[in-house]
Image 1 (tube, rainbow, N blue to C red):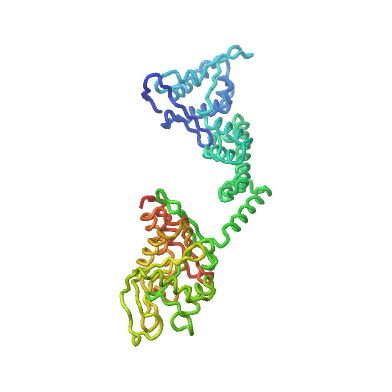
Image 2: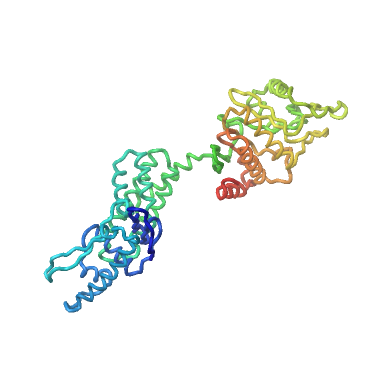
Length: 465
């Protein structure tokens, strides 16, 4: 038992009695260890809800002993008084008068004559069940947002079954029944208000608890099914979503199945070779199936020269690294730019970030590798930070096409993109509100996202990594 706590001046001990789960007593935030009998005494007095309990009743409920003859009554009182004294010392280690206020001795007139009784008087802030009841009752009458906050606060006080040590005993049954009934009402109302507020993700865990505790309740099952359906519809093509856990950041990483060019609310990233070729005639220089070809058809209505003009405008400020001869490279463009070069192409109020991550050989085969791709991504984020208009950025599985980075599979490519983005968030605090990695449905089976999940789990454990 905690003894000898020092209190400055007339400061009173701060009492916390916890019965919403395993019973506990804290004084000034420090747990106090009680003997089993004294714990049962505390529980019995709490269950009386402020009413005085006679010594004779305490002997029956706490010690489990039947009434004894009158000549043994003094022994009864002595045993009870011993535990009461232990509880008082625990409640008032600094002997500042707290025990006299909290644990009171009274005399009751009975058919057997005067009898000593004990009453536990705790303020709502000193007893978790009283705080729980007060907050829940006020929240049940509050507007949705206020109710959600209050109900969540109240339910956070619950650590298990109320009065777990005496669950099933007659003296505790009414008290436990009222608390569990109110807890159930609080849970159901929290599910309702969170759904009303458009937060099915916050309502779902509570609905799961209700369905677990009431397996035969059809209403609980229907509510749970409806929430899950709402979330499935909301997520739609979404496969993964995590927030970047860095101070001062407001950026999400989202992985979706779908089509890059259907991300109409986002800037797009399109990979190019170091020559920025766009010619798709006869599938010789650039494949008609490539993302570059789709860019021409879907955002520029097939007007390749318009895209070429915008690329040339952006490349005017970039120093070329060399020019091939017509003999060495008879087809396609011959001016080469550094790998990592990124051009922000304006299109209908957003940007297409054309980034060179591979080298187009004179044999018209594009080649790239891990180092080239990582460097290109790092350069991409620098351009996004300047030209991205703080819009979401949609990226395909860059490196998985005809210029395939052969040392990385699809899952590793996703992890590389994410890791590069997280590093960029440290360098550019206002980079983008959302990185959206778009995986084609046909690539899903070969895209293992476990490495990305592991990376975010590590970041959550070490936020300042």
